[in-house]
Length: 224
Image (cartoon, rainbow, N blue to C red; front, side, top):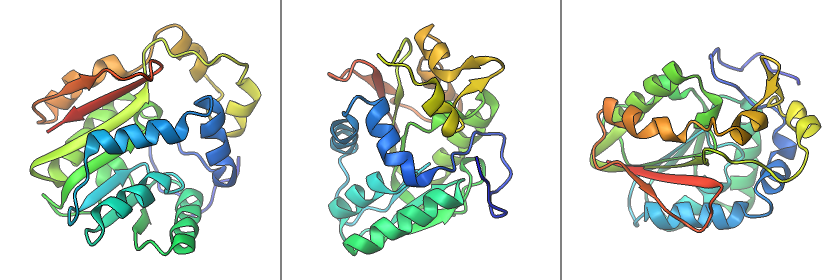
């Protein structure tokens, strides 16, 4: 896995194989990546003129959809991976979408307090150790407007892909940590989603809710 000199220092896991990432997410989600993304956008309900931040934006697919909803509102996307930001900028330029992508970390969001009406995050928080999650969630609360909302989706506890992924996960830097793959941990029910409600409340959020959907392997949460 190649890294660039521009990758910021973080304790979180950073993915660098951006050119293959969209195919990877389609594979891991069993082809449901578009449906999951659409459901997240539906729950987030972005309105015209709202300012939005996508944390861990990857290749920018979600941010591009959000921009189509908020229209004249500003959309920002941040990711720790310069390679992801490069692909995101290319995708946005291709469709003529004016989105502000930049390399940045969830634990040090480069925005003033109360900058956004909506913050989203998809399949990113499980890459962070718990202490970094707590710092990142506090940062998200800081940059949200009073009454703003945070929508997150990630693997549900007990999520277990129905196919062998070891080699593919290793390519993306998701292979073995401490001798055990992240997929193995999800299969044993060690998903981090059950920890999030308390973490969100500790970070200053209220009205924290886990939303039941037809996507049983994936969890959706909303907080204000």
